[in-house]
Image (cartoon, rainbow, N blue to C red; front, side):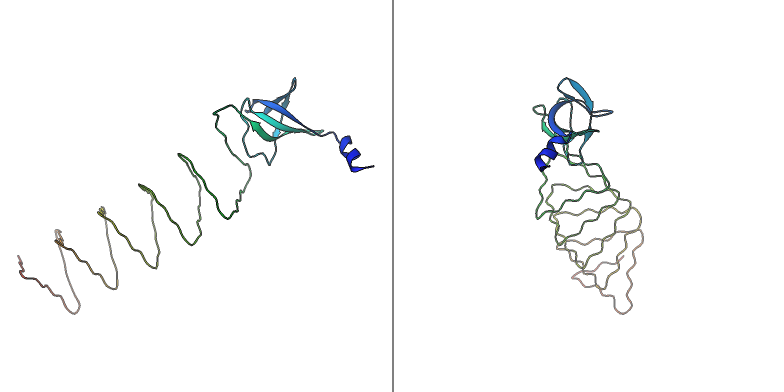
Length: 189
């Protein structure tokens, strides 16, 4: 028996149909018949009502293989069910007007992160940063610390072009070896 004859004997065929219902079950009209269908694992575009779809009719099930066309101006949703999704490419580009990512644990690994944004808002219960070197350049910096602001360093060098002011209810300066105040005019008290 030839391979072509064996294929003809299989009860499978491809047909197109129109999505009638998406919830609670996906239903497609093929000809005059209405079928409850399954979405093939490889069909990444979620079928919507009135979409024209390509279906595989098997002896025990009907599968939507692909969405062929949809209503003009309708949104296209790419979805994949399963425990894991992996994308590997030399380059990937995503463009959208708005986006949301909800992840319980996120790991980002790479050699460079370059972000260009107008505004960053970060809300966190705790923020820990560990770096070999941090360099910041800003026109204005405002910090508001409600409780404790503590700095421990080998050397601290603070320079101001016009004014350095320290104001407190109590201010302490102590040095183990040398404490020096130098200026053209020094006012104490």
